[in-house]
Length: 280
Ligand SMILES: Cc1ncc(C[n+]2csc(CCOP(=O)(O)OP(=O)(O)O)c2C)c(N)n1
Ligand SMILES: [Mg+2]
Image: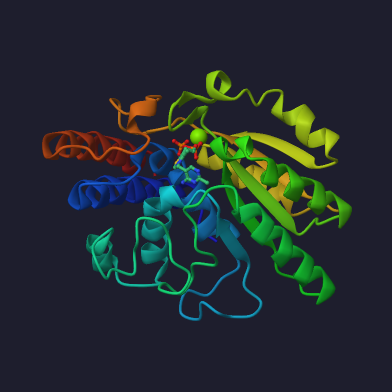
């Protein structure tokens, strides 16, 4: 379990990897991945009970990434945790790479489900959480879901199913970044009032600034004490977080930075890294 200073450092390293990987591949999804870098750092280095050297350890917590397109962030967190060598990140989105643009369960140990086709991850997570209950197992099932995925009816069926079985071992982290492929979520397909909707489905709802590592640590510590209901942490994130020209711009949903833009982004992230080191 790493402390807040370390976690900020991890999130910055994840952001730098995201820029390098997507720029190097010439394709990918930077906005959502950058926005969720802090969540991935906190999950992999503070929250998850896992063993990178034994990815199929029966008692591990499961992490389902339903919005598979932001996987650059997950791969980076996995590499820094020790699942595979950091230099393998260079193969991202290349033919025959284990690090596909949408994650492949069969190719990469530690990935719990293939994803890319949106709207499926929560049903998988509900099944895993129910199985754990039936087996009297103690591990938890975490599921990262994007706000764009909430446009799909099947997701709401899973939300309802989790209530039926009182799946308090299921923790959804919603990437509430207010954008999807074609623009602002509230213009494309209004989702608000989100908290009230989840409360109506009898879920425990927590809100957090998803780009504040200290608050994220606090919210996951609280989650550990909750019992009786499925839990959703609405992580309010800034898409493109950390790179000024990408922040809050839906156009960066699925576009790689050109070389000069990538260098500029990396420079900005290095300045932020020095600030993190100064505050250490
Ligand atoms: C079933 C399905 N429909 C459409 C797509 C195409 N698609 C990929 S990402 C995306 C936007 C989803 O919104 P969100 O995940 O909130 O985007 P982000 O915040 O990461 O930009 C869409 C429609 C898909 N991958 N799967
Ligand atoms: Mg979104």
